Structure formats: structure tokens, C-alpha cells
Image (cartoon, rainbow, N blue to C red; front, side, top):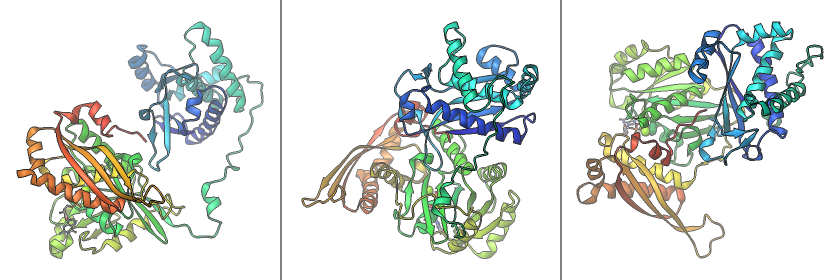
Length: 510
Ligand code: GDP
Ligand code: MG
């Protein structure tokens, strides 16, 4: 069960919020474990999540007016995500019902709850019970709404109220003011994962997420490849986090750094680039530290870089400036750059590097690691990837398209794997003992002119893309690969949600 709380009002203290969260978690556990919800939810393997927002009277009045056409202050509003009646789903859960946390956990968001604490406080005093009780009453009431219980029609009213009371009793906050209020055990008995794995006294490694942001072409991918040492050995593509953010997991004895390579920060122009901007921001949000990579040959920060610095500041993340391509410029010429960039952020450190020549990279890593918390590794050291070879193959093809076509085909392509057929060796002992993989893939582009660029003169371009991609896929799969590429034009696919869904660019919220 996960709950995220956003407090937009000062009328509810942090302390109260903490108590609220504890009780609400208990209430949700009860709801899920008892017969209130559909088995399909319980067996989905996902963590049920709700977003709770506290707003002021004006805020809730607006929401009430917008969503229910009632221009009045109210105590609570529910915004369900799933279509449910009395705890039962009206249809099977679909892949798009789920989202994934930064750490890859499967999550089932069931909706949003908006509460007005100011209003609740008034009601609490009217009813003569505690604020905690009133707030939880409203939250549980709202949770039941999210699960499809309703009181607007007479029949269900009783059912809803009886369930609600059951839960309030279950969590130790019965509505009857004369009943004693049980104290929570403040979660002391909860064992953390780390207490099992790491006995007290043992040093924990520095582990965490690092968002690598920067304009296209500054050398982010090059850095990741350099860090990974062997391409693909530890570069792991994680569709869960943000599908397009290729992650590299860097392990050393005392540290684990999970890199989120962002597709660059662009001005939103189409749905796709909106998604990409968004994914950069989401990457930064979930990160422990942000690295802004600049190109040493530039002297002034671009708008998007200023934005990135602002974003890091807003999210209160430490930000490090990596000035790449130091090999291509003189030391002196870096000085004005450093002076100009220093104006846009309070960088924790400014490290000139050459990702290509592996210069200064160790130093950069040390700085990054110094900002990561001591905690158990997120991923086992031996983990290579948790994305299917099929998906990575598509990414590898796309990588070569971007590589060979430069800016001519600006993010206007998607790759679809039409077939991925494995042939096993005659004496194969397991399913990885393959002699050949046949891959048929389509490159989807927007315009006929793009198609001709992708094909190139006499098909030279597509051949080059295919050869380079095939070599990388062979490295990954450790067997021979036959790669058949086709170019298809689908006009305006970037703006059509169905296509975006089809190619996996659908937004996933944390
Ligand atoms: P990304 O778009 O930020 O991922 O950039 P890439 O990693 O794809 O690199 C863009 C271009 O810059 C490629 O041609 C790289 O070879 C080149 N590049 C990357 N790092 C360096 C570097 O340290 N020095 C030089 N001279 N070129 C680099
Ligand atoms: Mg790149």
C-alpha cells in the first residue's frame, strides 16, 4: 500500500500529517485484506496506491465547482481511477492501469483524495471528537468511494456506512466519541529490509539515483558507455522508470550509482517531446543527485540548461556540473564557460571531463557518490538487465538511427519489433543456447522525406543502421542475429495517442 501526501495548506501540521498517514495506511491494508475489494486487485501483484492532497477552503471550493458543479466548500472529494462498483471491477485490469515506481515496483493507482483540513477541524469540534478521527473518517469515506461504494443512492448508503464504521473500528478510531482511542505502536515492530541484510556495524555502500541531464549531443550516452566499461555489460534499460531513460548501473565495492539518461530537455512541441521533457523532470525528481552535462565548446548556458538548474533547485537536489569534451578545448577556454554557468546554479562541484577519453570521469564519480545515501544496493551486483532482449533490440536500433541521421530525424521515429524468433542450437541445454535470432523490425517515421533519409541512397543508410544495430544486438544476445529492417510512414504519429501507446511512450506516473 502506498500513500503519497501533498500538503498545500498550512492548517494541517506535519505532526498531524504523520499520524494521518499511519492510520490511513492501516485503513488501506484493512480494505485490501478484507473482502472489500476485487480479488483481481489483490492478486495483481501490484501495490495499491492513493494520492492524498490537503487543500484550503478556496482550493476545495474550486475543485468542487469544476468537477461536481457545486460552488461550495466541502470536506472531501474523491477522484477514482478505476471503474468499480461496490469494490468490484467492472472489467479486467489492463497493463495501462499499472504504473511503476522509480525502483521498478508495480503500482496500481486507484485514485486521488482531496481533503480540506480547515473544514475538517470545524466538523471535528462540532461532533466533539478529535481532528485525527475526523480526518481519517473523511479519508476512509473517500477510499470507499474510490473502490466504487456510493451513498448517493439510498440502497448503498447503509452498506457504505457500515463498511466505513468497520474500518474506523479496525484502525482504532471508532466514531463513537466515548470509545477509547487506541495508541498506535508507531511502526517500531516493522523490520526494514536493510536490518536483515546488513547487521549493525557493517558499512553500507553509497547507493542512489543520478539523473544525467543535458542538451542532446553533449555526450551523456558516451559517459554512460565509458562508465559501463563494456557496452551493454551493465547498461540496463529499465522500461519501468521512464521507458526512454536508459539507465546504467555502476557498481563498485563501496557504491552503486543508477544513472538515468534523459532524452534531453526540449521545448514541448508535440506530445512526444512533451513526454520527453516530462521524463527528464521525472528522472530528476526521483534522483538523489542531478548531473548537468554541458559541452566544453559552448560558452553560455542555453535556456534549457537554465531550466534544468532551476528544476534541480526547486526539487532541492544537489547539482553537479560536468563540463564534457574537455579534450577538445583548451583549459583557458573553459574559464568563461565556468563563470557563466556558475551564475545559473549553486553547483556542488564543477568537473571538467572527457567522456570519450575517460578523463576526469573517476573524479566525477567520486563527487556523485559523495551525495548518495548509505543504504543497501537497489540492484544485485550481477544484475545486467531486466528488460527483455526484444525491447532492448528496439532501443539499439533506435540508437543507431539517431546516430546516423543526426538531427535530420529529430526524435520523429519509433521502432517496432514485428518478430523476434530464436533458433536453438541442436545440443542446446537451455533456452539461451541459441544459434540464431531472426528479428523483423519496422522503423516508423512521420514523413516521406524522413523515409528517404532513412533509406538513403541505394539503401545505404538503412544498411548502415542495420549493420551497427545488429552488431550490438549480437553482443547483447551472444549469438548470431539476422536483422530485417523496414521503414514505414505514419503521418503525424507523434501526436496521436494510440500510436504513442503502441510504442510504449505512454506517460507513467510515479
Ligand atoms: P548525448 O546526446 O548527450 O547522449 O551525446 P552522445 O553521447 O551521443 O555524444 C554526442 C557526440 O559527442 C558523439 O559524437 C560523441 O562521440 C561526442 N563526444 C562525447 N563525449 C565526448 C568527449 O568527451 N570528447 C569529444 N571530443 N567528443 C565527445
Ligand atoms: Mg544519448
